Amino acid sequence: MLSEFMENDRLALAIQARKKYWSNYNPDLDNAPKADATAKEIQDTYNLSQKQAQAIEIVACPINRK
Image 1 (cartoon, one colour):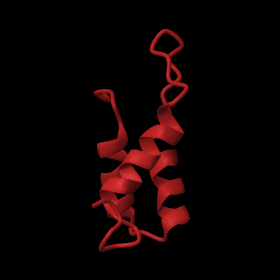
Image 2 (cartoon, one colour):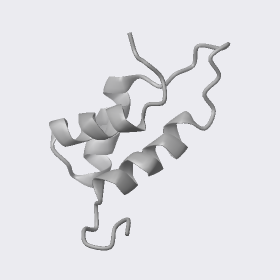
Image 3 (cartoon, helix red, strand yellow):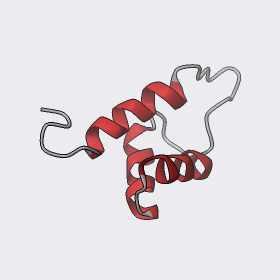
């Protein structure tokens, strides 16, 4: 039911963000995408509020940020 009732379904956006920003992640290289930059790009791309974009970034992030 992703995106069935809402064009910018937040769960669908989080799944897309995980695929886009984390596909090349390697913990040995310490190359995790930066949370602020990722959230800003999500915000701009989908015309969301800063809080919505940050929430999507948090859900999409597969690691425990320190």
